[in-house]
Amino acid sequence: MSTPKIVNLILFTAVAAVTFSSVAEPVVETRQVYFGDTHVHSSYSFDAFLNNNHSVDPDTAYRWAKGQPVIHPYNRARVQINTPLDFMVVSDHAEMLGVMRAVRNDSVEFEDLGLIGNIKRWLGIKLMMRAIDNNTGLEFFGRFLPVPAIDQHHPDPVADISNNIDSVDFFGDTSATSIAAWQDIIQTADSHNQPGKFSALIGWEWSSIPTGANLHRVVITPDGADKAGQFFPYGSDISQYPEDLWQWLEVTEQRTGARFMAIPHNSNISKGYMFDNTTLSGQPISADYARQRMRWEPIVEVTQIKGDSETRSDFSPEDEFADFENYDHYIQLNQKEFTVSPADYIRPALKTGLAIEQKVGVNPYKFGLIGSTDSHSGLASVEENNFWGKTATDSTPETKARTGGSPVTSNGWNMSASGLAAVWAEENSREAIYAAFKRKEVYATTGPRIRVQMFAGWDFPDGAQSADNFAAIGYQYGVPMGSDLIQAQAPLEPPQFLVRAVKGPVDANLDRVQMVKGWLDAEGQQQEQVYNIVWSGDRALDSHGRLPAVGNSVDLTTGRYSNNIGQAELAALWVDPDFNPQQSAFYYVRVLQIPTPRNGLLDAIALQLDKPPRGAKTIQERAYTSPIWYQPQP
Image 1: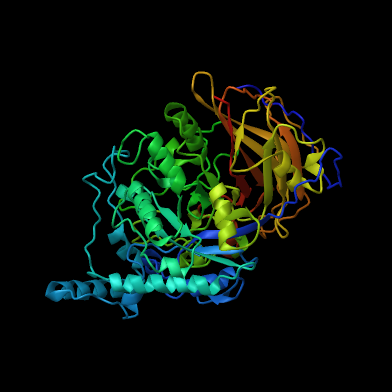
Image 2 (image 1 turned 180 degrees about the vertical axis):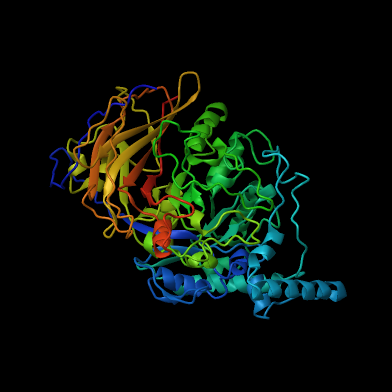
């Protein structure tokens, strides 16, 4: 790789009014950024319920997201989000939807089960009630976890002989209960949906996990209960192959008129299957498969409570910020040694997509990026000093370390207060947010409300990065994140990137903005480079393009920090110094905050520990934009 250089780099320290006589009738841009969470579980999810969320139902989850105080499901404290969300999806698991809650509340609806069915029902209720009463729901939860494969990677994990679940159908046919739960979920979403103020989108989670490989997808629709009431969510208990999910979505879309998209999450624990070179069944990826996947899965979740999935130093050894919130725990019985694969992470997947496209003509991994929490407490909490854990049980410092009897080796100390989905949309409505998802004009943050825009083009006006009408210039002269940038006819100039990042109103200052580039070289080998394109202070790049650390203002004795380092806003007009017009490439922006206290440090201070038992004391929160793909003309 060549030594990185900065070309046409302009540091931004203050917003200056700039007008351009060359811009005739500039585009009036009305898109605003909205922050939300597409991945929240209520007490209707069986695993959330077995982890002590017995009371936060969809209504409570939406009330929290809107900023109202609610009662925590485990510690019973009054809790309240600091900054309300603009949109949210309650995405409970389709499998056993509402069953655990209904059994405990003695409201489960059974079909005519006969003698054997009623015996199974009685045994199941007894076992579950004992687990709940003894606060051993995690052990009971273990009955529903998959047995790991003997080897780490199989041609078809769904068909693997070891892909059994150490449980029985305790409750028989409970479809009536699940249908009732679904009706409550969709009606509650409609009741909380307030166009222009708050968007409550309808969705669920398809939870395929063959041999412990996380292949889950959150499915969302912009439509209301009138259409959502015409179907019941498709679950992995019907099929664990994503192609079958996509086929169901297509058939249901044609039957009901409802629209859908699926969002993969936690690729970091997919055991090499999420972004593989083959399909899940081990078949070569074809152009038809790639088109089908991109039709239904235009975006992916890159960061959440169970870790960050951007990249690791295993695959990006030159990236000093690669190992961020690594999560090395499978969701399975008998935890085996954790291994990593490039097919588990976003940046390697984006490169793999370029390689597959070179072979079959279509890129199956041409996705945008968002973050969301995957909270199972029903509380979409991403604020480090107001983080309530993944499960309800994780909500207090004493219970974060619960491990006794748990089939899963991770605990609350491993959990990351992340993330958020940011969308650029014309208004806060289901339709506008869904449209932003579809066109991939979205990005992820690990929690802060960092405001980021990126455009690519060939001839932005001088000084565009500091213009008051920054967005209008970006749309008129270029394309936004999530788009394709087609090779200019002539001359073959390198593309320009117009980037601006602004810290959230109550968040930490920004350290730097980086451009991440991936491409295929002349031999077809996958390459990547991270460029520091604009930063705070008077630091200078060294001969290898590295930048000195911004510093650290965190007081490790109090868990407080100061904004006396970093800057509130950074912007640049950057040109790729290593551009080759014959090579396909992708570009996305990574924005880094100054160091701030991690939630584990705050709990450790409260417990008077020297350090958190697991996890770092401080972190540099960040944002990841969706990529822009450069494609040479044929």
